[in-house]
View 1 (cartoon, rainbow, N blue to C red):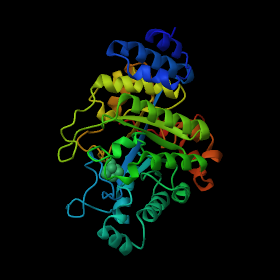
View 2: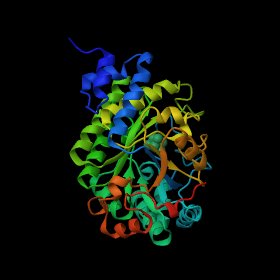
View 3: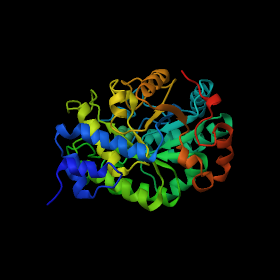
View 4: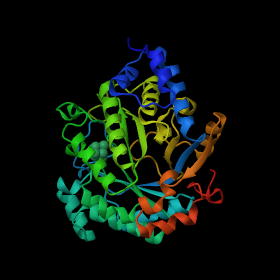
Amino acid sequence: MSATLPELIARLADGTAPALHEAYRLIEAGEEHLPQLCRAAVDVRLRRKAPVITYSRKVFIPLVNLCRNRCGYCTFARTPADPDARLLTPDEVLAIAQGGAALGCKEALFSLGERPELRYETVRRELHKLGYTSTLAYLRAMCALVLRRTPLLPHVNAGALREDEIAALRPVSISMGMMLETASPRLTQRGQAHWNSPDKNPAVRLATLEAAGRLAVPFTTGILIGIGETRRERVDALFAIREVHARYGHIQEVIVQNFRAKPGTRMANCAEPALNEMLHTLAVARLILGGEMNIQAPPNLAGGDFARYLQAGIDDWGGVSPLTPDHINPEAAWPQIARLRDETVRCGYTLRERLALHPQYARCPQRWLDAALQPRLAECLDADGFVRAEEEVLV
Ligand code: SF4
């Protein structure tokens, strides 16, 4: 006879990884099981890691806000006719990075639309004027510029990449990221969130995760919930991430992000996931991915419910910026780091700053970083891989 749901959750609280059919039962559990799921998630996390919550002090550099994709929820991507469409110049990139450095930031998060030059002649022309034939070649040059002229360390979020492209970016970035979002090809069909978005084909994105693993690139990925996926499809995406991580060990962080409905998008009138839906998914993600995985939920999309997220088993707040807005969710301001610290401490945890490289990876730079970048870590990290206390800016 199969175990009851409370018996199953109790068994998994020791960190035993659920099988797929068990994970389906967890994600389809009724709301009455949420408290037990959250307790089990925290147990699993605390069995493997100290009660520390991490964050990265960053600036957000939106290198180009044009994109060849057409995701149904996106307000970041503009068309060339939009007066706010832009490709940042090297001077603009440097000004943002230097502004962040002056405020104690360590991470330069390069975020950009995917391959806009394949769709827009104007982007091809602007790149050509700057001396480049592709957005990714320009990105590489801008990462190198930031490394040369500032103390910041680039993290590249450029979407789906081929193996040769990842290899070209590895010497100029300490980590990379790309949300898997979903493993369901169903969402690429007409009328769905990823229709007309070739880079959101799950097979393309999974190939990027595989290539990053082969090249030993510390990689951030995650799922986006509330974009039309079923609960089982969320589990399928988490299993796909678990499997690629089991092969290469390179997934340094998994983000569970909640969809936000934005005016002017195809999905403006779609319902946003409720808080309990988010907590349920976070807790199940922790049970699937295990106690050692770094799991993040963006604090600026938490609606102030920091404590509830911590009680669902997360251990990272991701990048928080004292200077630049979240260009992907510009309506959602970052919380002040001092407030995040107070809330984290109130829940019994310590808040520590990390680089865009989680401590587990920072402690093994020979394996995970290009040789030219390794000396940069020693300048700011302690022996455990966290930012040295004297380097932290607490506001
Ligand atoms: S790939 Fe990213 S930037 Fe491009 S449309 Fe989709 S969400 Fe927007």
